[in-house]
Figure 1: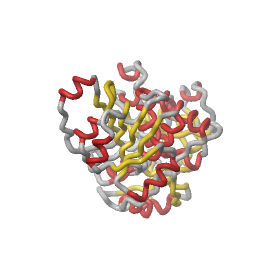
Figure 2: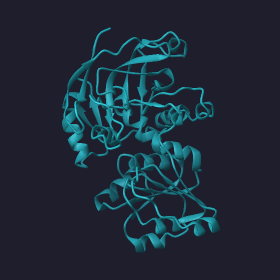
Figure 3: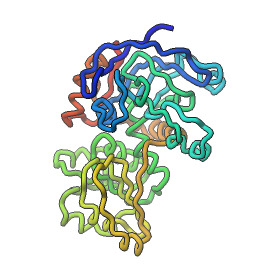
Figure 4: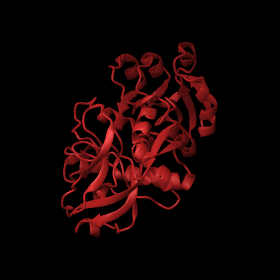
Amino acid sequence: MAEVKALAARTAGGPLEPFSYEPGPLGAEEVDIAVEYCGVCHSDLSMLGNEWGISAFPFVPGHEAIGRIVGLGDVAAQKGLAIGQRVGVGWSASSCLHCEPCLHGDQQMCTTLQPTIVGRHGAFAEQVRSHWVWAVPIPEGVDAAEAGPLLCGGVTVFAPILDHVQPTDRVGVFGIGGLGHLAVKFLSKWGCDVTAFTSSPRKIEEAHQLGATRTASSTDTAELKKLARTFDLLLVTANVSLDWNDIIAMLKPNGRLHIVGAVLEPIPVSVFPLLLNNQSIGASPTGNRAHIDKMLRFCAQHDIKPLTEHFPMSEANAAMDHLRAGKAHYRIVLDMNL
């Protein structure tokens, strides 16, 4: 079997350099995908630096891949997929399908979940491999060149909308970045009254263009207090510490604070206000396969796509530096040219 050309870091935080590997025999339930585009996610940066202590080197990033099927295992070939079909692969590359979460439909929480870039080579490469469940067909009406970030950042914010939001709800989104700008777009088309909370004055006008009903400061305590008991759901997409007491106070009775940003510091919680108002705090990872399929259909129906900047894949180091410097607007996509 021909070797796969890729870009890999040899050490934690090291530069991405040309690398090739032998993929091994294709398993019966596996799919090989020739990569056309790959989004760049902040998780790629975290894994590159081994910030979570789970990276293996040489490390090939990339878990927002779009491409064409070039190989199907015997079982995968019976699952409605075809050679040449365009599909995408996000954070998840394989799940067992027989543990309790999988049988419940929560494959993204499989007890033996295999992420695309943990212990295996990702999609900063000519080719990426996944289980057939996670080779997601890209529907007509979804721009393949822009779709990669939907498979990680997109579904991360769309899944809690499906699970917790009604079209008449008032929703606040904290952090108008790679995740938050998609959340505003989704919620606006979902029918919600959307408030975009940001600490950046330059993002105020753009938040309205994305579909926000209004904007507010995420750091002005006085402004937050004026919005007490306003929101059915508050979605935190940033990974920064916030004024949690004032944020929780903005929830209506039965409201929910939902976190999808990787907030690293403990969140202090006073239980009594939650108890009195039947409020809840939750968080979630990406999404299951059904979440992804519904999100892509929703994007096709409403012409939703992320705001992206494109780099050739051969310039992946420059793209990573751009993201590391906080300059991405709002997601980066690499175009295959290896």
